[in-house]
Amino acid sequence: MKPRTGLIGWRGMVGSVLMERMATEGDFTRIEPVFFSESQPGEPGPCLDGLAAQPLEDATNLHLLAAMDIIICCQGSEFTRRIYPDLRAHGWQGHWIDASSALRMAEDSVIVLDPVNRAMIDRQLAAGTRTWSGGNCTVSLLLMALAGLLRQDWVEWISTMTYQAASGAGAVQIRALLQEMGHLHACVAHQLTDPAAALRDLEASASSWLAQRAASSPALVPLAANLIPYIGTARPTGQSDEEGKGQEEACRILGCPDAPLPVDGLCVRVGSLRCHAQAVTLRLKREVPLAELEACLAQAHPWLHLVPNEPDASRHQLTPAAVSGSLRIAVGRVRQMTLGPRYLTLFTLGDQLLWGAAEPLRRQLGILLERT
Ligand code: NAP
Image 1 (cartoon, helix red, strand yellow):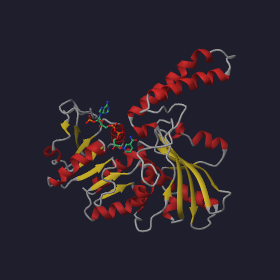
Image 2 (cartoon, helix red, strand yellow):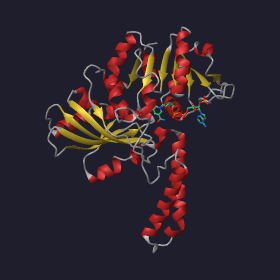
Image 3 (cartoon, protein in one colour):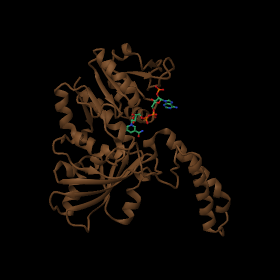
Image 4 (cartoon, protein in one colour):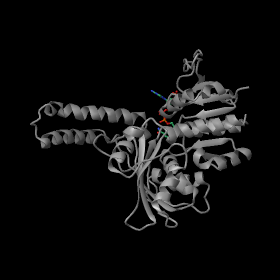
């Protein structure tokens, strides 16, 4: 019998990418899907290949949720915190796979990133774990990029400076970014048609619009022609919450809470759409030849794409435009730093809605299905 699998949050940004991937990989043929909604119960659900749309079930109805063998929830932390404890208190024993941060640090939950921590997932599954969380997008992408070096236990510490996409801040930020791009163009469109127009005038018109926009909407700082060097709330350490998750979640995924791998850096929001990039500096525990480091990075898993540290390759293969929408984890600009032979730098990027969000959840469903 196919497991009854509830999907909550499938309309959202992460959920819709998950739906797309599940359809592409034929996952829906392996489960009996039941679609839930918090705001639209009773409305028609999605049309799956060859099946009529079923009405959406109420995502807050514990009785209905308790009839599921597996639930995949991409609805957000607030929903998970409100519904999940009551569902467990109700005696529900099914598998809960969650996109949010709500359960990531819970004792009985595992952060899933199977190309990196499959052995831990298998161990915990055998031990009876039934709660699985997707990791923070930046952390998952960083670990996917460095998987080879981490597996060798070559890394002493990591500092990562991020360039995070608008999609990480939700659909509102993407819409705002695209609108800002349109407005910016509109305010200089006429001047752009004149090849003799002074560049200083073009820049002044665009900058003046940007300044007005920033002043008029303090809650939504513009991202077009701009960046935001703070993501999330503040911590007493001076880190932003996003920065604090780096070490916490990396160590949890790698299973090294007693001998933490130091990870720290600055997280910055930029105007790319759905690819997070990171400029990484790391110190190695010992000197390793560059060719060996590159081979180790490249062979970590099938999605890793090592880009030669050359101008053309970097400009064309190591950009959000090249990687967006694909499962590739691009790693390039790899070189030993002039700081010393044990200091390595590299640049990496990946689609934060795929490996950063939906794909680990989809693959965890696959791991559970292997066992049923
Ligand atoms: P989202 O796009 O805001 O969607 C969440 C829910 O909002 C939907 O499931 C839907 O629920 C409701 N909704 C209301 N109006 C909608 C509309 N017009 N279109 C689509 N949905 C609408 O949330 P998200 O960005 O996918 O994030 C979900 C969770 O994943 C969060 O906990 C987030 O932190 C985590 N996460 C996000 C990312 C990311 O890049 N965004 C990455 C990793 C993890 P109903 O159908 O019930 O109304």
